[in-house]
Image (cartoon, rainbow, N blue to C red):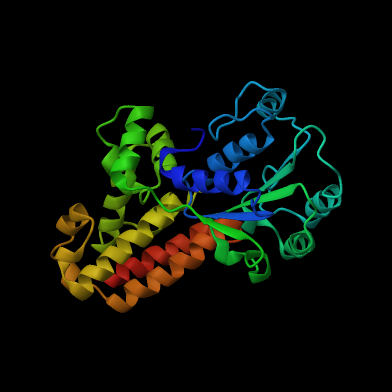
Length: 323
């Protein structure tokens, strides 16, 4: 199977549609980041463009498979933001829409992958709408989205939705262990909120030590034992948004404990570190921090904020929540 183990149901569904001649013109693959949607979309494009698929899998050796592997299949269009950019622009979509009038060159169909779909600016999305409303035969569009709510309703309503939830933790651990044996996979999955591909990347780049270091910094801040500027500077260096995500979930965990008791916390280590402080936390401040973090995460993705200043403001409000 070319897809990941937890994607088998989705794979079999699309293969069934294909066999019955009912494959939708546009499919929106949606779910959390790092669950393998992009891997799935590319694997399915390979299956569709293969001239000799066997048992619902591409053969891997035909001319079409070889061209796709080399990155120059004439019937495959891969659309994503340009390197260093943040949007898929209208000119790119217009060029694609114009090309849909062409017949496939060597395969039975043409496949277009748009990822992430929410990277299309409003003009690009509007331009795509026409081909979604009046699809040309032999053209299929796979839209990968981590945040489908950011897409216009007109786009969402014209796609078949295919959901990709996080895999069960044990299934993710088994897959990760097969990639690289490590006793720390359960903890690493917790760091990345259960996303297995992110856990693999995080293990290779950082490991649990950096996660615990930031959690200690967070706890010290709430206890009034950290320097605001130093914390803001340290957190602002993370361009991936991972630290902001950790802070969000730690803060949510504390808000839960503040409202319902410390036994309701998911992070038992953080609960132990802050057990004497939790009953005194300002819940209004905590929920204010959660609101600010949502905006901050969006700003990090679009890169339109003074991130260090935002993190310093956030650090001040966290300190005030604990003192």
